Amino acid sequence: DIQMTQSPSTLSASVGDRVTITCRASQSISTWLAWYQQKPGKAPNLLIYEASSLESGVPSRFSGSGSVTEFTLTISSLQPDDFATYYCQQYNSYPWTFGQGTKVEIK
Amino acid sequence: EVQLVESGGGLVQPGGSLRLSCAASGFTFSSYWMHWVRQAPGKGLVWVSRINTDGRTTTYADSVKDRFTISRDNAKNTVYLQMNSLRAEDTAVFYCARDHLNGQGMDVWGQGTTVTVSS
Image (tube, rainbow over all chains, first blue to last red; front, side):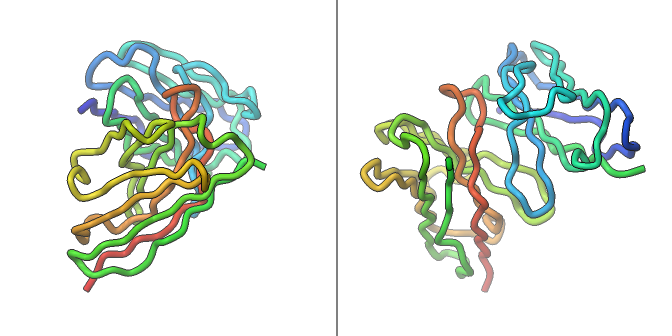
């Protein structure tokens, strides 16, 4: 199985900050990577697919980059609604696997 | 409105069985692969299973293989997860999700249904 490792596990930031989350794959996944946002008690929400494609309806302050084994999710200016947990997920091969999550907290 | 609504969760004893259902509306259900994903209390997301459009191709995580069965009824716009030989470690919120662009993640999720395996 492909292992996905996110860093950091927790991130403290303020409104307006630029935030970057890293995701590493244990083997090459090309650009077959998605990012999700999850708020407590809610289902995940797709933000980014194919490493850098913004899902319809997602604010443009979210962006993704990377390929092969190294990927990043960037929030250009953190908004109050963005405090949540973020997960990367590879779909290069089954079983699909997620990173362990990065919790973005208020500083 | 595009929507997925799960049902069927509950409390079950170890070794027991449960069948989850996920009713879809607002889109052409028969055109989409569907997935199940679970999340244990306080833990991360774990992909469980997927089924193709006609139900003939299924894939499972190793942790549930030979115990869980995914199926679908396109006439009823519903996907199912039959769970047998349940273990305490299967305790989780189970989400059904719609496949995105032929295998590029999951773009529509249900609200989740809680399964608790305990004596």
